[in-house]
Image (cartoon, rainbow, N blue to C red; front, side, top):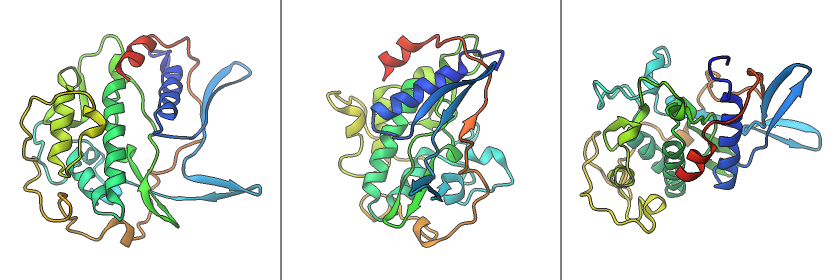
Length: 262
């Protein structure tokens, strides 16, 4: 994008960080075709065996939560009505992940992904940028994708995250304590370990905004069918182009900031 010439390198660098942190394992390369520089990211929802490409079954969390696909804003939490049941929240996503078989691992991975999004300043980690992968071996959280350090751009007039952390939307006010409190509101005895290793939490855990926790290992039981018990019809949100052609980049302005945050 002409107004943000570093965007291409920013996304590539972000993806390299996810690989180093074990949040993805798909290749990312900056390539050039004649006068066009573009970013090519390997699809996480495809496998290749003996030269044959086989699609996997992704389901983004907006679909899994049965949000109204006709309203695009439902994938974001509303700062004016944070508890709007028609919209996504971090807690609702965690509760759904906790409802699938082996859900503790998925929730732990979701907490690690959330910490990454906050660290790099990704304000676009909404419900359609988080997905499940329905595999023959079971359902798991998809790798991190479409993660850009948007909040490190200069000249911003708004610093809101897509989904609030412990009730806080403003990225500048999110803290380790806030991440711990958010994770503890999801339930589970060890929730928050990924964030708080070596950090003393000085805040009292809060009750989640979405209501009391119910039975099932500290997570609210999903009051609909489990995601693995359904075969949803994809609305195309899980697909991404392999070669996303974007404007030529002239460097990453905030490499040191991201390294320090991560």
